[in-house]
Image (cartoon, rainbow, N blue to C red; front, side):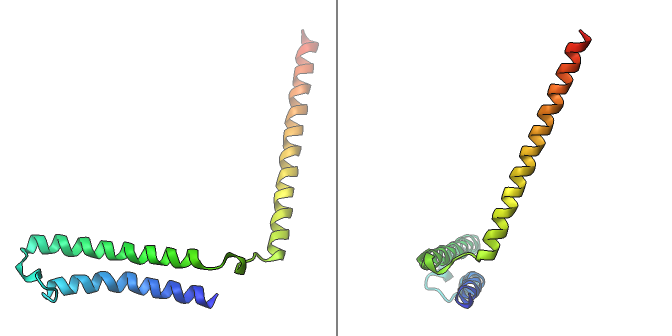
Length: 116
């Protein structure tokens, strides 16, 4: 669990730091060739690269999550038992409701036939 939290924290920090670093580098002419751009072009290029950097960090985080072994994560048996009991209870309540509505509709159809 601590490893997952650590990966999430690192990815979150990079999602914040990468775009800020790109925007800072463009605004302070730290990248070669950025001094030759017009202010409009510099804004567009730096914004586009900042958005791309966030998407790269997200893709890397997803890749790391998919690389984790799946057998390591097993659900809690007590939780599973409680969930199954809840589902079974919901099913029995739904069946009882259907049976009740069916018997009510049959009773109303019998009373209509008697009136005729």
